[in-house]
Length: 381
Image (tube, rainbow, N blue to C red; front, side):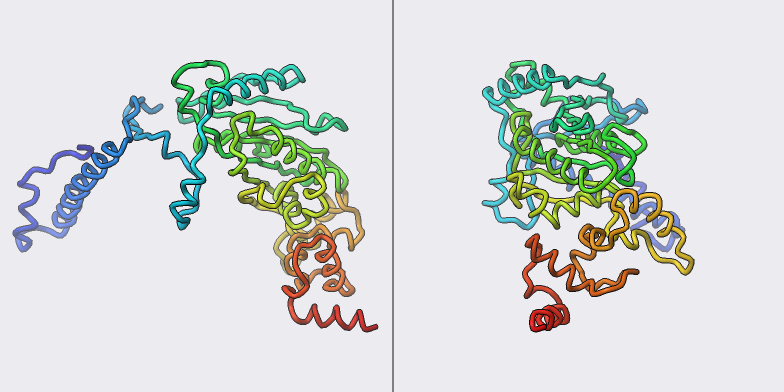
């Protein structure tokens, strides 16, 4: 019983409502609902335990007052759509890390360390308990030191690599979360706390149990940062399974300029991903956080549009220059909706249509009718 027992005398006011105050009625109704919830809770917990779940050893929280109890079943760890069929859900259950996988994991880690990667000093999470281990500065390219990435492992993956115990046989391949840091294409780094990469990676590694990857990239002029992140994704595709990652569950995330990079990789995959052999189904999903999606008007427009002018001068122009065609090709909102108005002049729709057709983003028939008509007139001329 989690909640305190309810004395029978506390239930009497509900039987004689005309003799109690409204405050007593509300208090009693809450207590009675708690009694009902306890019965349902007790029954459900018993059912789960009967089906194979088990209680883990409880640990006190940091506040040393409340104890958190965990009901666990390694066999149930999965990533699946709520509305998927039973066959779909069974196919997405994360595969176990076999003995051979553990040996391969240990060998891969040793190889990366021999190539210059290193373990950072592990720190317990803020919640206490599980430690997230970070393998830093794994090179995925040879043109710049910035072409490196960090990997954040849940503790049990690292234990499985170095301890061949029976306990390790229950460890499973984990979903992979790749996060691209922001910084206006000119600032920040994969390990900068100010730009949030480490915090995001540690959070998903600790709270969700993912293997998190934070790639660095060459900052500055387009298109280096796009090619670099694409190369980092190829590295993940080629190596993450050996490190305990599940290739069926790879997710891409980006914040600010990183959100722009992530969205542009999806929309112009024919330019950046296809040449590297990264198939469309490789990424299970994309998470975009406060991204830049219009290089002409990156922020909301105000009567006195100071914010956009400042952002264009400080970040967009240094990274993309002043060529309007180039900025159109790299504005995700314009790629998705060519009819969207901007501060530019000329026939944007036709130019964007050519970009979409070149990169095979959409078929011509899927575009608005007025754009199809404009395209037809241009061909006639």
